[in-house]
Image (tube, rainbow, N blue to C red):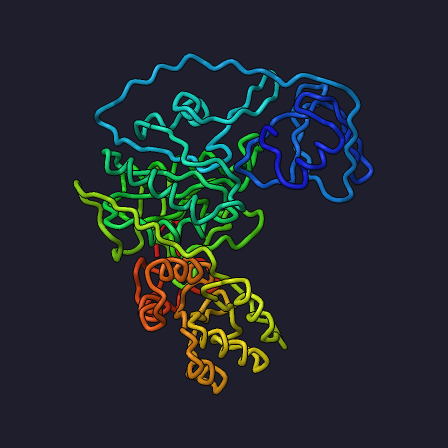
Length: 449
Protein backbone atom coordinates (compact mmCIF):
# COMPACT_ATOMS: atom_id res chain seq x y z
CA UNK A 1 0.00 0.00 0.00
CA UNK A 2 2.03 2.94 -1.35
CA UNK A 3 5.19 1.89 0.45
CA UNK A 4 3.70 0.52 3.68
CA UNK A 5 4.46 -3.08 4.48
CA UNK A 6 4.70 -5.59 7.27
CA UNK A 7 2.79 -5.16 10.52
CA UNK A 8 2.14 -1.45 9.91
CA UNK A 9 0.45 -2.19 6.57
CA UNK A 10 -1.67 -4.86 8.23
CA UNK A 11 -2.68 -2.46 11.01
CA UNK A 12 -3.71 0.25 8.53
CA UNK A 13 -5.75 -2.28 6.59
CA UNK A 14 -7.42 -3.45 9.81
CA UNK A 15 -8.67 0.05 10.65
CA UNK A 16 -9.65 0.67 7.04
CA UNK A 17 -7.20 3.53 6.51
CA UNK A 18 -6.16 4.29 2.93
CA UNK A 19 -3.73 6.81 1.47
CA UNK A 20 -5.31 10.27 1.73
CA UNK A 21 -7.64 9.37 4.61
CA UNK A 22 -7.57 11.53 7.73
CA UNK A 23 -6.18 9.74 10.75
CA UNK A 24 -5.35 10.54 14.35
CA UNK A 25 -2.15 9.23 15.94
CA UNK A 26 -1.75 9.08 19.72
CA UNK A 27 1.72 8.41 21.05
CA UNK A 28 3.54 9.21 24.30
CA UNK A 29 0.82 11.60 25.49
CA UNK A 30 0.75 13.52 22.19
CA UNK A 31 -1.91 13.50 19.49
CA UNK A 32 -1.49 14.31 15.79
CA UNK A 33 -4.12 14.56 13.04
CA UNK A 34 -3.62 14.72 9.32
CA UNK A 35 -3.75 12.89 6.00
CA UNK A 36 -2.04 9.53 5.59
CA UNK A 37 0.70 9.99 2.99
CA UNK A 38 2.56 7.50 0.76
CA UNK A 39 6.14 6.62 1.65
CA UNK A 40 9.16 4.98 0.08
CA UNK A 41 9.53 1.20 0.28
CA UNK A 42 13.35 1.26 0.47
CA UNK A 43 13.51 2.43 4.07
CA UNK A 44 12.76 0.70 7.34
CA UNK A 45 9.15 -0.38 7.81
CA UNK A 46 7.96 1.05 11.13
CA UNK A 47 7.41 4.72 10.33
CA UNK A 48 4.27 6.41 9.04
CA UNK A 49 4.05 9.69 7.09
CA UNK A 50 1.35 12.17 8.08
CA UNK A 51 0.55 15.47 6.34
CA UNK A 52 -0.43 17.99 8.99
CA UNK A 53 -3.00 20.79 8.45
CA UNK A 54 -0.08 23.23 8.43
CA UNK A 55 1.18 21.62 5.21
CA UNK A 56 4.23 20.01 6.80
CA UNK A 57 4.90 16.29 6.71
CA UNK A 58 5.48 14.43 9.95
CA UNK A 59 7.20 11.08 10.22
CA UNK A 60 5.99 9.01 13.17
CA UNK A 61 7.67 5.83 14.36
CA UNK A 62 4.90 3.39 15.20
CA UNK A 63 5.36 1.07 18.18
CA UNK A 64 2.99 -1.26 19.97
CA UNK A 65 2.01 1.66 22.21
CA UNK A 66 0.99 3.87 19.28
CA UNK A 67 -2.76 4.21 18.64
CA UNK A 68 -4.00 5.04 15.14
CA UNK A 69 -7.64 5.91 14.43
CA UNK A 70 -9.27 6.71 11.10
CA UNK A 71 -11.34 9.90 11.42
CA UNK A 72 -12.30 10.69 7.83
CA UNK A 73 -12.22 9.67 4.17
CA UNK A 74 -9.82 11.21 1.71
CA UNK A 75 -8.27 10.81 -1.73
CA UNK A 76 -4.70 9.85 -2.63
CA UNK A 77 -2.63 12.89 -3.65
CA UNK A 78 -1.74 13.20 -7.29
CA UNK A 79 1.58 14.22 -8.71
CA UNK A 80 2.18 15.29 -12.26
CA UNK A 81 5.45 14.24 -13.83
CA UNK A 82 7.72 17.08 -14.90
CA UNK A 83 8.67 17.17 -18.55
CA UNK A 84 12.24 15.94 -18.65
CA UNK A 85 13.95 15.30 -21.95
CA UNK A 86 16.73 12.77 -21.74
CA UNK A 87 19.27 12.46 -24.49
CA UNK A 88 22.02 9.88 -24.31
CA UNK A 89 25.45 11.41 -23.84
CA UNK A 90 28.04 9.19 -25.57
CA UNK A 91 30.78 10.59 -23.34
CA UNK A 92 29.16 9.08 -20.23
CA UNK A 93 28.97 5.45 -19.17
CA UNK A 94 25.76 3.48 -19.58
CA UNK A 95 24.50 2.18 -16.24
CA UNK A 96 21.46 -0.06 -15.86
CA UNK A 97 19.54 -0.01 -12.59
CA UNK A 98 17.82 -3.34 -11.96
CA UNK A 99 14.88 -3.16 -9.60
CA UNK A 100 14.18 -6.13 -7.36
CA UNK A 101 11.24 -4.77 -5.39
CA UNK A 102 10.10 -1.61 -3.71
CA UNK A 103 11.35 1.66 -5.08
CA UNK A 104 14.78 2.65 -6.28
CA UNK A 105 14.30 6.21 -5.12
CA UNK A 106 11.45 8.52 -4.28
CA UNK A 107 10.59 12.13 -4.84
CA UNK A 108 8.45 14.38 -2.74
CA UNK A 109 5.78 16.75 -4.01
CA UNK A 110 6.21 19.63 -1.58
CA UNK A 111 2.76 21.00 -2.46
CA UNK A 112 0.85 17.87 -1.43
CA UNK A 113 3.53 16.23 0.71
CA UNK A 114 3.16 13.00 -1.25
CA UNK A 115 6.07 10.62 -1.68
CA UNK A 116 6.09 8.82 -5.03
CA UNK A 117 8.26 5.95 -6.24
CA UNK A 118 10.75 6.84 -8.94
CA UNK A 119 11.31 4.05 -11.39
CA UNK A 120 11.52 5.38 -14.95
CA UNK A 121 14.72 7.16 -16.06
CA UNK A 122 12.81 10.45 -16.01
CA UNK A 123 11.69 9.82 -12.44
CA UNK A 124 15.16 8.74 -11.38
CA UNK A 125 16.71 11.92 -12.80
CA UNK A 126 13.93 13.94 -11.18
CA UNK A 127 14.53 12.32 -7.79
CA UNK A 128 18.33 12.39 -7.93
CA UNK A 129 19.34 14.96 -10.58
CA UNK A 130 23.03 14.44 -9.82
CA UNK A 131 22.83 11.13 -11.70
CA UNK A 132 22.48 13.03 -14.97
CA UNK A 133 26.09 14.15 -14.68
CA UNK A 134 27.35 10.66 -13.95
CA UNK A 135 25.83 8.25 -16.45
CA UNK A 136 23.15 7.43 -18.97
CA UNK A 137 20.59 5.61 -16.84
CA UNK A 138 18.46 2.69 -17.97
CA UNK A 139 15.95 1.14 -15.57
CA UNK A 140 14.48 -2.36 -15.70
CA UNK A 141 12.63 -4.52 -13.19
CA UNK A 142 13.74 -8.10 -12.53
CA UNK A 143 11.21 -8.82 -9.79
CA UNK A 144 9.07 -7.00 -7.27
CA UNK A 145 9.22 -8.43 -3.74
CA UNK A 146 10.35 -7.21 -0.35
CA UNK A 147 13.84 -8.42 0.41
CA UNK A 148 12.69 -10.73 3.20
CA UNK A 149 10.76 -12.68 0.55
CA UNK A 150 13.76 -13.33 -1.70
CA UNK A 151 14.21 -16.90 -2.98
CA UNK A 152 16.88 -18.76 -4.98
CA UNK A 153 14.60 -18.53 -8.01
CA UNK A 154 14.53 -14.73 -7.71
CA UNK A 155 18.32 -14.57 -7.25
CA UNK A 156 18.63 -16.36 -10.58
CA UNK A 157 16.11 -14.00 -12.17
CA UNK A 158 18.11 -11.00 -10.97
CA UNK A 159 21.34 -12.64 -12.14
CA UNK A 160 19.97 -13.20 -15.62
CA UNK A 161 18.82 -9.59 -15.84
CA UNK A 162 22.28 -8.41 -14.79
CA UNK A 163 24.00 -10.68 -17.32
CA UNK A 164 21.76 -9.52 -20.17
CA UNK A 165 22.54 -5.88 -19.48
CA UNK A 166 26.30 -6.40 -19.21
CA UNK A 167 26.38 -8.59 -22.31
CA UNK A 168 24.40 -5.91 -24.15
CA UNK A 169 26.99 -3.24 -23.46
CA UNK A 170 26.20 -1.71 -20.08
CA UNK A 171 29.26 -0.22 -18.37
CA UNK A 172 27.96 -1.52 -15.06
CA UNK A 173 24.79 -2.58 -13.28
CA UNK A 174 23.21 -1.33 -10.07
CA UNK A 175 20.79 -3.67 -8.29
CA UNK A 176 18.32 -1.81 -6.08
CA UNK A 177 17.55 -4.08 -3.15
CA UNK A 178 16.05 -3.98 0.32
CA UNK A 179 18.69 -3.94 3.04
CA UNK A 180 17.46 -6.85 5.17
CA UNK A 181 18.74 -9.62 2.88
CA UNK A 182 21.05 -7.63 0.64
CA UNK A 183 24.09 -9.60 1.86
CA UNK A 184 22.47 -12.90 0.88
CA UNK A 185 21.68 -11.70 -2.63
CA UNK A 186 25.16 -10.20 -3.01
CA UNK A 187 26.70 -13.57 -2.12
CA UNK A 188 24.36 -15.45 -4.46
CA UNK A 189 25.23 -13.17 -7.38
CA UNK A 190 28.94 -13.46 -6.53
CA UNK A 191 28.85 -17.25 -6.95
CA UNK A 192 26.37 -17.22 -9.82
CA UNK A 193 27.81 -14.69 -12.27
CA UNK A 194 30.68 -16.32 -14.14
CA UNK A 195 33.08 -14.36 -16.33
CA UNK A 196 32.08 -11.06 -14.73
CA UNK A 197 33.98 -8.29 -16.51
CA UNK A 198 32.23 -5.15 -15.25
CA UNK A 199 30.91 -3.87 -11.89
CA UNK A 200 27.70 -5.13 -10.30
CA UNK A 201 26.65 -2.97 -7.36
CA UNK A 202 23.87 -3.63 -4.85
CA UNK A 203 22.39 -0.58 -3.15
CA UNK A 204 19.51 0.23 -0.85
CA UNK A 205 18.41 2.69 1.77
CA UNK A 206 17.98 2.52 5.52
CA UNK A 207 15.77 5.61 5.56
CA UNK A 208 13.33 6.67 2.89
CA UNK A 209 13.55 9.75 0.71
CA UNK A 210 10.79 11.62 2.53
CA UNK A 211 12.89 11.82 5.70
CA UNK A 212 15.51 14.52 6.27
CA UNK A 213 17.98 11.83 7.35
CA UNK A 214 17.50 9.72 4.21
CA UNK A 215 20.55 7.96 2.87
CA UNK A 216 18.90 7.03 -0.44
CA UNK A 217 20.36 9.74 -2.68
CA UNK A 218 24.00 9.47 -1.58
CA UNK A 219 23.87 5.68 -1.72
CA UNK A 220 22.43 5.71 -5.24
CA UNK A 221 24.85 8.37 -6.48
CA UNK A 222 27.79 6.43 -5.06
CA UNK A 223 26.53 3.12 -6.47
CA UNK A 224 26.18 4.59 -9.97
CA UNK A 225 29.67 6.09 -9.62
CA UNK A 226 31.13 2.65 -8.85
CA UNK A 227 29.11 0.93 -11.58
CA UNK A 228 30.01 3.49 -14.22
CA UNK A 229 33.57 4.45 -13.37
CA UNK A 230 35.29 1.77 -11.33
CA UNK A 231 37.45 -1.10 -12.54
CA UNK A 232 36.02 -3.53 -9.99
CA UNK A 233 34.67 -6.49 -11.94
CA UNK A 234 32.99 -8.03 -8.92
CA UNK A 235 29.69 -8.00 -7.09
CA UNK A 236 29.81 -5.42 -4.32
CA UNK A 237 27.56 -3.49 -1.95
CA UNK A 238 27.76 0.30 -1.76
CA UNK A 239 26.18 1.97 1.27
CA UNK A 240 26.84 4.76 3.77
CA UNK A 241 30.22 4.49 5.49
CA UNK A 242 29.33 6.75 8.42
CA UNK A 243 26.32 8.30 10.08
CA UNK A 244 27.01 11.52 8.19
CA UNK A 245 26.38 12.24 4.50
CA UNK A 246 30.06 12.26 3.67
CA UNK A 247 31.06 8.97 2.01
CA UNK A 248 29.99 5.48 1.05
CA UNK A 249 32.02 2.29 1.35
CA UNK A 250 32.47 -0.38 -1.30
CA UNK A 251 32.09 -3.84 0.26
CA UNK A 252 32.89 -7.15 -1.42
CA UNK A 253 29.64 -9.04 -1.93
CA UNK A 254 30.72 -12.15 -0.02
CA UNK A 255 32.16 -10.33 3.02
CA UNK A 256 29.44 -7.84 3.93
CA UNK A 257 26.84 -7.91 6.68
CA UNK A 258 24.05 -5.65 7.88
CA UNK A 259 25.13 -5.02 11.47
CA UNK A 260 22.52 -2.58 12.81
CA UNK A 261 18.77 -2.40 12.39
CA UNK A 262 18.57 1.32 11.64
CA UNK A 263 21.95 3.07 11.43
CA UNK A 264 22.88 4.39 8.02
CA UNK A 265 26.36 2.86 8.27
CA UNK A 266 24.89 -0.54 9.06
CA UNK A 267 26.82 -2.42 6.36
CA UNK A 268 30.31 -3.52 7.35
CA UNK A 269 32.98 -5.65 5.73
CA UNK A 270 33.64 -8.58 8.09
CA UNK A 271 37.08 -10.19 8.59
CA UNK A 272 38.56 -7.97 5.90
CA UNK A 273 38.69 -4.35 4.82
CA UNK A 274 36.37 -2.69 2.28
CA UNK A 275 37.41 -2.54 -1.35
CA UNK A 276 37.25 1.24 -1.29
CA UNK A 277 35.09 4.30 -0.84
CA UNK A 278 33.29 7.05 -2.75
CA UNK A 279 33.75 10.53 -1.30
CA UNK A 280 32.76 13.80 -2.96
CA UNK A 281 32.18 11.90 -6.18
CA UNK A 282 35.71 10.47 -6.19
CA UNK A 283 36.61 6.80 -6.05
CA UNK A 284 39.38 5.72 -3.72
CA UNK A 285 40.37 2.05 -3.52
CA UNK A 286 41.91 0.62 -0.37
CA UNK A 287 43.33 -2.51 -1.95
CA UNK A 288 44.34 -3.99 -5.28
CA UNK A 289 43.32 -7.65 -4.92
CA UNK A 290 40.11 -7.35 -6.90
CA UNK A 291 39.11 -8.60 -10.32
CA UNK A 292 39.78 -5.93 -12.96
CA UNK A 293 37.18 -4.80 -15.46
CA UNK A 294 37.78 -5.59 -19.13
CA UNK A 295 36.56 -3.82 -22.26
CA UNK A 296 34.98 -7.02 -23.54
CA UNK A 297 33.66 -10.25 -22.13
CA UNK A 298 30.57 -12.33 -21.65
CA UNK A 299 28.83 -13.12 -18.39
CA UNK A 300 27.25 -16.52 -17.91
CA UNK A 301 24.72 -17.33 -15.23
CA UNK A 302 25.30 -20.50 -13.25
CA UNK A 303 22.03 -20.55 -11.33
CA UNK A 304 22.07 -24.06 -9.89
CA UNK A 305 21.09 -23.71 -6.22
CA UNK A 306 19.73 -26.38 -3.91
CA UNK A 307 17.03 -24.53 -1.92
CA UNK A 308 16.71 -27.06 0.89
CA UNK A 309 19.69 -25.92 2.96
CA UNK A 310 19.29 -24.78 6.57
CA UNK A 311 21.26 -22.22 8.57
CA UNK A 312 21.08 -23.22 12.23
CA UNK A 313 22.36 -21.38 15.29
CA UNK A 314 23.96 -23.62 17.89
CA UNK A 315 22.82 -23.11 21.49
CA UNK A 316 23.68 -24.73 24.83
CA UNK A 317 22.22 -28.21 25.33
CA UNK A 318 20.98 -28.25 21.73
CA UNK A 319 19.63 -31.71 21.00
CA UNK A 320 20.08 -33.94 18.00
CA UNK A 321 16.34 -33.92 17.28
CA UNK A 322 16.78 -30.46 15.76
CA UNK A 323 18.94 -31.86 12.98
CA UNK A 324 16.85 -35.04 12.75
CA UNK A 325 13.79 -32.89 12.08
CA UNK A 326 15.53 -31.05 9.26
CA UNK A 327 16.69 -34.31 7.69
CA UNK A 328 13.17 -35.73 7.95
CA UNK A 329 11.88 -32.60 6.22
CA UNK A 330 14.17 -33.33 3.27
CA UNK A 331 16.95 -30.81 3.83
CA UNK A 332 20.06 -31.58 1.79
CA UNK A 333 22.63 -29.53 3.70
CA UNK A 334 23.11 -27.76 7.02
CA UNK A 335 25.29 -24.82 8.02
CA UNK A 336 25.85 -24.49 11.76
CA UNK A 337 26.64 -21.22 13.51
CA UNK A 338 28.82 -22.78 16.14
CA UNK A 339 30.24 -21.20 19.26
CA UNK A 340 33.73 -19.72 19.41
CA UNK A 341 36.20 -21.42 17.10
CA UNK A 342 33.50 -23.69 15.69
CA UNK A 343 32.06 -25.81 18.45
CA UNK A 344 28.78 -27.56 19.28
CA UNK A 345 27.60 -29.34 22.45
CA UNK A 346 28.02 -33.10 22.81
CA UNK A 347 24.24 -33.40 22.88
CA UNK A 348 24.31 -32.61 19.15
CA UNK A 349 27.04 -35.08 18.18
CA UNK A 350 24.78 -38.05 17.45
CA UNK A 351 22.54 -35.92 15.27
CA UNK A 352 25.54 -34.62 13.34
CA UNK A 353 26.84 -38.18 12.92
CA UNK A 354 23.48 -39.42 11.62
CA UNK A 355 23.13 -36.44 9.29
CA UNK A 356 26.55 -36.87 7.69
CA UNK A 357 26.03 -40.63 7.60
CA UNK A 358 23.05 -40.02 5.31
CA UNK A 359 25.29 -38.12 2.91
CA UNK A 360 24.13 -34.68 4.07
CA UNK A 361 26.97 -32.15 4.49
CA UNK A 362 27.32 -30.17 7.71
CA UNK A 363 29.39 -26.98 7.53
CA UNK A 364 30.67 -25.20 10.65
CA UNK A 365 30.87 -21.41 10.95
CA UNK A 366 31.07 -19.21 14.04
CA UNK A 367 28.56 -17.03 15.85
CA UNK A 368 31.40 -14.62 16.47
CA UNK A 369 31.33 -11.84 13.92
CA UNK A 370 35.10 -11.54 13.61
CA UNK A 371 37.74 -14.26 13.43
CA UNK A 372 37.74 -17.65 11.78
CA UNK A 373 36.86 -21.23 12.56
CA UNK A 374 39.73 -23.34 13.89
CA UNK A 375 38.51 -26.76 14.90
CA UNK A 376 41.90 -28.23 15.78
CA UNK A 377 42.55 -26.18 18.91
CA UNK A 378 40.21 -27.94 21.35
CA UNK A 379 39.06 -31.54 21.62
CA UNK A 380 35.43 -30.63 20.80
CA UNK A 381 36.46 -29.20 17.45
CA UNK A 382 38.67 -32.20 16.69
CA UNK A 383 35.79 -34.54 17.54
CA UNK A 384 33.53 -32.65 15.14
CA UNK A 385 36.15 -32.93 12.41
CA UNK A 386 36.29 -36.67 13.01
CA UNK A 387 32.52 -36.78 12.49
CA UNK A 388 33.04 -35.20 9.07
CA UNK A 389 32.03 -31.60 9.75
CA UNK A 390 33.39 -29.21 7.11
CA UNK A 391 35.10 -26.10 8.61
CA UNK A 392 33.88 -22.84 7.09
CA UNK A 393 37.13 -20.90 7.55
CA UNK A 394 36.26 -17.19 8.03
CA UNK A 395 33.11 -17.19 5.91
CA UNK A 396 30.09 -15.35 7.21
CA UNK A 397 27.40 -17.91 8.15
CA UNK A 398 25.02 -16.43 5.57
CA UNK A 399 27.71 -16.60 2.88
CA UNK A 400 28.46 -20.23 3.79
CA UNK A 401 24.72 -20.92 3.58
CA UNK A 402 24.53 -19.50 0.06
CA UNK A 403 27.72 -21.28 -0.95
CA UNK A 404 26.46 -24.64 0.30
CA UNK A 405 23.27 -24.15 -1.72
CA UNK A 406 25.46 -23.46 -4.74
CA UNK A 407 27.71 -26.47 -4.06
CA UNK A 408 24.74 -28.82 -3.66
CA UNK A 409 23.31 -27.49 -6.90
CA UNK A 410 26.32 -29.02 -8.64
CA UNK A 411 27.11 -32.21 -6.74
CA UNK A 412 25.83 -34.46 -3.97
CA UNK A 413 29.20 -36.09 -3.23
CA UNK A 414 30.51 -35.16 0.20
CA UNK A 415 34.16 -35.04 -0.80
CA UNK A 416 33.41 -32.73 -3.73
CA UNK A 417 31.21 -30.52 -1.57
CA UNK A 418 33.97 -30.31 1.03
CA UNK A 419 36.47 -29.24 -1.62
CA UNK A 420 34.12 -26.58 -2.98
CA UNK A 421 33.40 -25.20 0.50
CA UNK A 422 37.12 -24.97 1.31
CA UNK A 423 37.99 -23.27 -2.01
CA UNK A 424 37.90 -19.50 -2.28
CA UNK A 425 35.54 -18.88 -5.21
CA UNK A 426 34.57 -15.22 -4.89
CA UNK A 427 36.61 -13.65 -2.11
CA UNK A 428 34.52 -15.29 0.62
CA UNK A 429 37.59 -16.81 2.32
CA UNK A 430 40.61 -14.75 3.28
CA UNK A 431 43.88 -16.72 3.57
CA UNK A 432 44.61 -14.95 6.82
CA UNK A 433 42.21 -12.71 8.72
CA UNK A 434 43.58 -9.20 8.93
CA UNK A 435 44.21 -8.13 12.55
CA UNK A 436 43.03 -4.60 11.74
CA UNK A 437 39.61 -5.88 10.60
CA UNK A 438 38.16 -6.10 14.09
CA UNK A 439 35.46 -4.04 15.80
CA UNK A 440 36.74 -0.68 14.59
CA UNK A 441 36.96 1.34 11.40
CA UNK A 442 39.76 0.03 9.22
CA UNK A 443 39.92 3.16 7.10
CA UNK A 444 40.31 6.88 7.41
CA UNK A 445 37.96 8.92 5.20
CA UNK A 446 40.85 11.24 4.34
CA UNK A 447 43.83 8.95 4.26
CA UNK A 448 42.38 5.58 3.24
CA UNK A 449 43.44 2.38 4.99
